[in-house]
Length: 606
Image: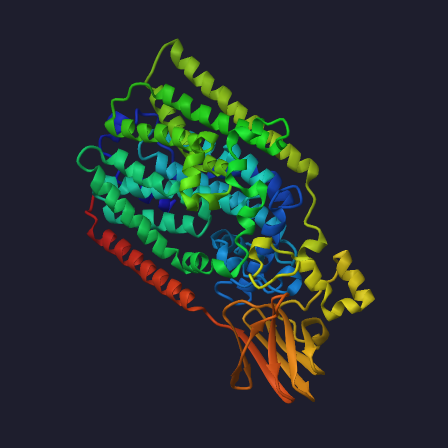
């Protein structure tokens, strides 16, 4: 509620008399209750059943959430290396995947308690994300339109078909779902700066919103980044547009600094994983995912549904523009122009006509799916809808009823698309199978670059697979192949293999950032530790450093030791780019706190 007060403060003094057209105020607590109710209506089935097999990405988000939250509550501040993934061989997934949604979900772990509850944790986190996106949208919209029109626009933002049906119930795109929450916060920051009196606060809001977006979903960030600049240019008006755009650019840079702890390693360490897997598959190439491919007779049912979702979202925005009609409020008019520009620009990016743009802007290829621009299309459509409802109150005659009736019909179409997706999910949903949380095979693009063999072949080559009974349990998905994080017991045959020589080993520690092994060797030996090699792994024999190298085909860590009794310690150390990222984030965060405190001290008393 404090956020709603902050971003709504500083509305134009004339807004209530000229621009807002009456309609009464909405108490913040009432907005929270109503938007939470909508989030529960939309996400209630997900809350009850959790992520599962019916969603495209349900498997990966389930195992990521399970491991991220376990390591976080185990004392690791930023779990980048997930030790138990890939059958226990480890994965660098969170060197590259944004962490903010999983920090939010991890806060729910004490509520759900037991292991294996990550699917339901994600369901609860999705409801939180839906509610938060509505609150952020309402706080932004109510700056320029009547509060009830803003509440209607925020409610539509929560239940928009791409947001609810596609991202949550069909794709299980958890990070993109959370990205919806930060888009209005960025624009609210621009509005605060445009007001003049709240420039410092607006700059901090913009930076925080953009930093959260960067650390939530990079494809949406890439598509959305020009939008605040266009918004600033439209809102600033003649004479102030360039100055406001410059301040907005500074805020975006500041936000990138806040997210540096994530984004710097993610951008600079890509040579160490199989990034080609993101674009090599035909289904992941941008030119096969334009909107009109949904009309192909052999197109997937999802793409056909997506076509109607995009069309319905565009129609709501266009109808809102028609409802807005002639506007006396210059600020409102400029923002409506921005909404129309974004509405058509995002639709263009999803059509085959935009192929030259995708071909000549290399970074756009990493977005993979042009239809991901529907998130920004939804934001513009909900703004135009709110502006149309705001202006509709000032009209009269039979045309007023036609306008409202048309909007109701279009929103009913949204509701039908949501209902279809929820019904399909409910019919086909199954809880995460046991093998998801025992095998825990990660996405292929996050396999370290040194891994040349298929993952299954590597796992089959481990010594444990010579034990028929254990192989059976692992194949059934009832028993993990390798020791789980934190276990201290003599499971040497499961985690350490003598590639050369013979001896005896005992595992003393098995943690994501440290492994300790007692080795007794009667001759020089080469140990193969069942964790993938990745930069940052260091090894010591007693206090003397020893070389760690990747195996030639499996990519597992190998260490050479002389004959004798040794204590082998392996530890993950922060890479230089991680130290730089932490430093930039901490400095940027401290600056945000100081600017915010100073803005409160210098704010004139009412």
